[in-house]
Amino acid sequence: MTFFAWCMIAAGFGMAIGSFGTGLGQGLAVKSAVEGVARNPGASGKILTTMMIGLAMIESLAIYVFVVCMIILFANPFTEKVMQLAGTAAGTH
Image (cartoon, rainbow, N blue to C red):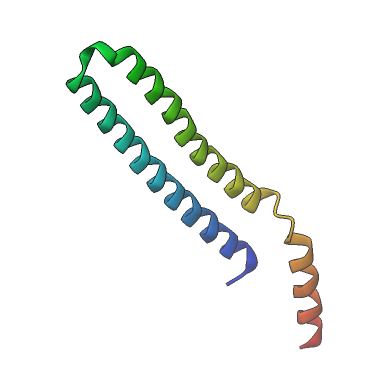
């Protein structure tokens, strides 16, 4: 496989793992918040505020993964070096 194909595969797996972890974390956070409100409805305002801040922190993980995947796909710092190595390897055959 070529370098660029591996970059596509790596970005796809990165997004899959990052999305899975983010979804799992957000689901657990909402579950716990709903349980907390069910136990103490008077504290729902504080629980909701804390949950929203936590969800924003969890969602930032997905955004970081997305940014890294876009860097791998479109601004890969190793592209030039790999192309140089591919050119010298092709010339030796």
